[in-house]
Image (cartoon, rainbow, N blue to C red):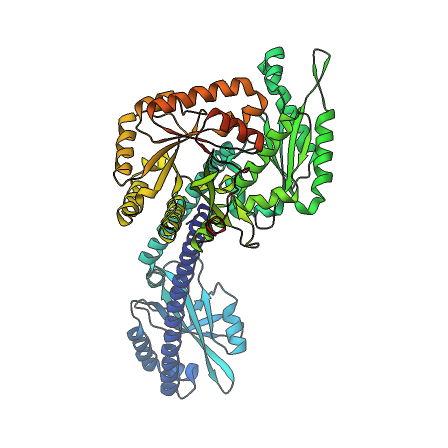
Length: 625
């Protein structure tokens, strides 16, 4: 789960828990209130039956009957007393006299008030009940001891209130009802406290995360973003929504050397400020190196040519001062409009880097805008594009002939891999675009398997030919690759002796014994070993001494020197030829590009030649037919 989604999930979960806790609290409070209301309703029904009983005993002439019959008064007081329970503190009947004062008619208390004694109500609701003839619940104030609330019920005869029956609820009972759900309320409050602390902790962690993130994605020296911001930005946005510009200050080390690093830092800070000011707020500036910045501009802000030239002009004319000395910076820029199918900012950066290097090699202090043709090549470096091509087996092997120099007869063919363009099947994509991208990945293994299948299929189809195949020495040291090669050689034992492995070496060999053992395994099946690009890079004379090889392929850069520096080149090539003869190696001259070079190679006595002058890479059937 992505970090942004995980954070949203945590926040959603906490909000959900808070909502649940609030819901529980409201539900519990509602449940408590409902319980109280049910008790009041029971009391109302209770009082209603008591009133009916008194009206029955007094024939609806309560005061008159009680005046005439003191004994009935006593019995009714005792009856009211019998109705009292733990819930109810008092029960009594009041009559309003001609002066508007309330007098006791009946009292169910053990220490009952005397008949017609005065009662002073503390609520005007008594009068309201008397006037309206409708029952009221009176919430007692704290000053009335031991009481929670009072139910005032009118005794109505012929639509006229004759008296009031008052039932007082005990305060202890009210507290009991209020605390009925208190254990649950305690749990809820603890939950709320926990959630509150969790929110505080989350906010603290969010603050710490924000500060840590800011430190990570913000460049410490300038107010621009750091390169880590790129992955974050393009996790939520598309690369194709932006124009991309790469800008670098030329020879900035001279500024540091002449004026000091402190002034150099000030220049970089001012440089970035000027750049930010020249761009819109929607643009992004990322410091990718010491004096290198990547600028991302939304495509809706105009054309890339106009925007790039404007920015270049702004940065170029900016002055910097050191002790009243005016300083101008030389800057190099490359710019491009990202294609609609671009998915990786790394591929875009690679193309911009190459263009920037081209600008610098031509004199620096210039702007290079990448054209549409260069943009097409980005696809070929896209890992997803390459993966799809390999899955659909859009792969082809072309074969370039290797000739016997004197007779001009083809003795062998070198297999060269190409990918087939998806949109234009006639267009073939050279390894230059995709090989470095997939090196060391499962896609490289997949490609190698397809190439081996092509090569052995060609050897089976044409039993009279020999083929050579490029293999990186790193591949032979890779267990998975070596196992795949062994399986293919074992499977095609009878034709393995017509296959030559051309060894490419990008790194200096550290363990010659291990390499020699690998060569022995390949030669055990009858295959030959050719050392490719001899004379360049790491390939040296030490290889001839310490490795058992069969063929020496002279690097094309040495062959090209036959035209540029023919005398020296011939001496070097002659020495290689003589040494190879002593060791018994066959020699192949690569990059024989024209007749003049061919004649010089022929004159040097180099046995085999390969190059565009003699034959271009083509499908094998075009040469066999």
